[in-house]
Image 1 (tube, one colour):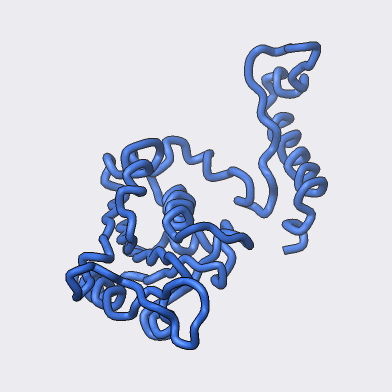
Image 2: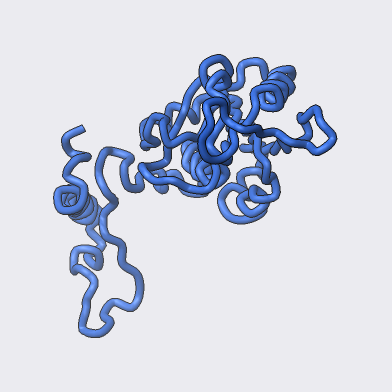
Length: 224
């Protein structure tokens, strides 16, 4: 899969490109992440990409032309790319949506700043708006990284172990409890079933614990 990211801060993406699961996926050619500096598409010597809002108000608004020109440039080589704007007004990001998006070959992510982008971009150039939660952050870059990570996990061969796909939310359930060595610490012991070596009993226990955790912490998932 190819991710094209339109941003004012392309260097922010070096961390996920150079470390962890995403970096390994890039080395295996499962992923390609290309960042586009939006200021390169500005048509003035100051490289401005924003202006004052019509009607007044606080902050600045990202202009149509630089964004539209950048999207057009991306579509010259990837005409079917799905263009997503990271926005607090967007569709909430959930596991099901991430899985659906992982089936695309190319996704373009627009990272907003300031008061956001001109509404004409949203109406005419964007395929989907996505929100990572009901809170405000300084820009779309962090949201784009979250989206890249959760989508990438669904792509074949990105994760070293396919069982890792059975994390929380995979079946509308939270993950079961995990334990590691030592067997006892501060008089707190690992559940005996995990030491039994009886895989069927272990699997049953894990399902029961997943349901129990979900009922206690996220009952809404059982209602979906």
